[in-house]
Length: 430
Image (tube, rainbow, N blue to C red; front, top):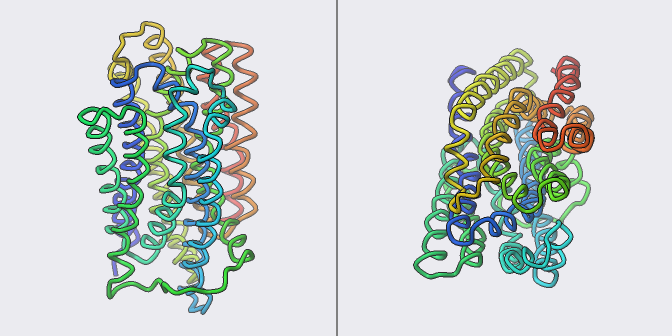
């Protein structure tokens, strides 16, 4: 039996790579769109990112939450463990179809609701329609990946996310440039990538080491709700970037117009890589925490918690230093038009915004810990504070006081406020 440290290193390293892979295809979208369409394309992409985040968040909540319930039930030998997978797929499909219909009939309305003017709606509506048509696939991918990871196959889960991301990046280039499909090509590449992830996960589901039961059961809304209770931290881990993006877009449109939103698009998309790393630590730790918790081994639970928090702090300092030194170079990659306003806003934004990850890393890992040990009430409180209340409050107050610099500082301030609550929650729950 591997030590806690070795198991942690195995799960977390592979999961971080997988999660970074997911974020990289959004960065690839941003890069290729900046080359093919310019600032207007980046603005359109950034305005629609909250819809991405909502779909991903729901898939993550259902998948991670159901995976946690499966892992705990299986470690306790409970028969209900066999019902969670199909139940998650069923409800994920129902919700995915609802998003699919919205995207099919109302893409212009969605873009306009998110703050797009007539010019930006014209650029982004086709992109929105295409990727929303594949909403069920995004949710299935999250569900399958979570169950593979909780069934002690982190290598396959990592391969699924990495290869789906690689597929997206390659097809982004092929569809946008040689085939000249522009924004529609970017949407098609993104929309098809989760199908690759699901197919790779099937290698585990039909293999001899699979303990996940793949058979139809009567759908249970109660089972879904119980799963979502402990999956709420995963939901907030995904949705918080979408909520932040939506709020910031509206504020920035009033302060700096479309160029400011494009600059925030660079900051937001770059920060997704950082968020993915911390989500990787959180979700990589979760199967171990759920298993140790299910078996009543408090010592191993605490050791895993400290390993997760310590890793998050180290990652945070490394990323802050890297961005502080390389902010201008990062912005230049996405500024193909050489827009001086975009460069100025985004360079300052990256340096200030990334300071928040010192606190955000602890909060993301902490909410994952609370969910894994079934401290659903504390996980919900910390998640709602971080993902909605604190960030919205800080964004409006600080932008009013300090303009664009206040917008960038809202994220660090909100994460600091949340961390105070997080420390209390962890002390009471672990």
